[in-house]
Image 1: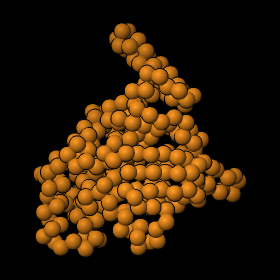
Image 2: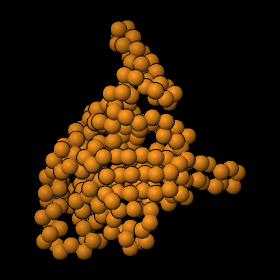
Image 3: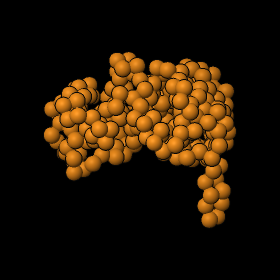
Length: 259
């Protein structure tokens, strides 16, 4: 479904050169919920943004559903992006547009007739549990509701792939859980492949079936999520598990002390 080969990306600043991605290789199967985990600055956001060329890679190739994204011109890429939905950490909604108008926007850009847009938006809002918020504005919504609008907008063009860029990191734990459950439901009902980047182990454990660890722009480990927790192989994975165990022990201590 998604094949990444020798993907590289370098940023040049006035004082240094940063190798954000260094010959990354990755394969994601159709219908997977695939997690990419890494510490801050590891390159995970750059990687996911290269998948739809919001960031232009310097080398390597990306193939999605048999289409080589990295070989496309602007017109071809614009068409391909309609089938690659993107969910952003900070929602990226239009404050001056209603929920309905935010979700309808990609369909309007794609040139769908108004009747088709109305029907599709109604169905998507029902799917994400926001039918009663169609005429509300983003400033009237909670963070979780805003993210549901972002998910609905990403689904508007019936994508084959959903890219989630730290979509739950700005949300509280209860809201995070509800958003993850929604993504699982979308994956099951629509068969959409989901690629999710995170630095939160609970997110990885709750929703993903396969995963990759990225560190300093390189993939250090891939495999089933169960393997990551039971038998981490890379130093990065071991550090994540160690931090999780320390956090859990501290929480148990605090609860025992009544703190």
